[in-house]
Amino acid sequence: RFSRISYDLDTKKLNKLTMYLAVEGICDASNTVWQGLQAFADAYTDLKSHVTNIQTFLQSQTQDVSGIAQDKQAARQAMCAAALPIAKAVHAYAVKAKNNTLATSVDFSMSDLMGGRDVQSAERCQNVSAAANTNIANLASYGVTAAKLTALNGAIGAYNLLISKPRDTRAQGKTITGNVQAEFDAADVDLGIMDDLTGQITNAKFVSDYKNARTIVDT
Figure 1 (cartoon, rainbow, N blue to C red):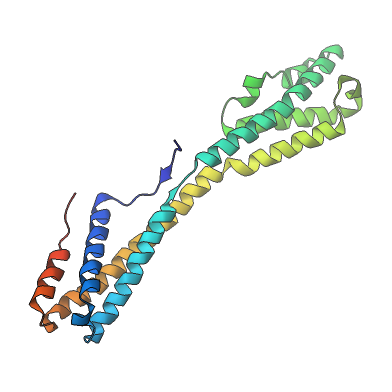
Figure 2 (figure 1 turned 135 degrees about the vertical axis):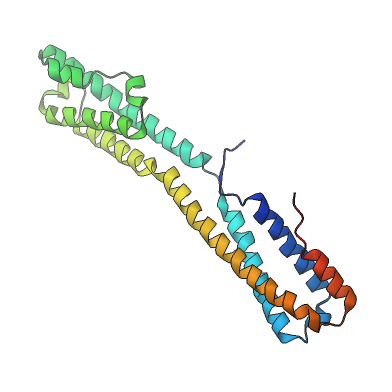
């Protein structure tokens, strides 16, 4: 099952949306009753557009971010897998050269590289790359090549691009939520106009059905 991040409407707004849809059902079923009342018809047309927008926003609000998390984890794994053999090679060279500072700086296991916060993992791999690049002239016999460093740097770059993706998705959700509220506010204005104009409609059954539909049922 996919994990999801959802910028859901609260229960009150969902109940209000249900009311909007009930009003639509009544109006659509009896459109000949109110079509001659132009102001009512205009308000209803506008209402329907806002309800459609709300439904569209709702569809976009529930976003599957499991894919983003999986992509980021896969990129982290690839980055660390590229960094580990280079770190080991640099460490071996440092031990041979009796350079304890260099040896300590790249003394990582796979769990060391993978562990910690997102940025910490990237920084460790970047440190491995920097140490190897500084000593590249001495590392050929240890199996470290410029091509391997290029591949590692590419993996680090790919991972860095994914670090902020979940946060970006949440930020987009906040924008969407603000837009939804504006649509509800506009829909309420249209309904207020329609409410005021029901006194101009002589079909008692329609008016009764309309008023019943306008009742918000708490769930």
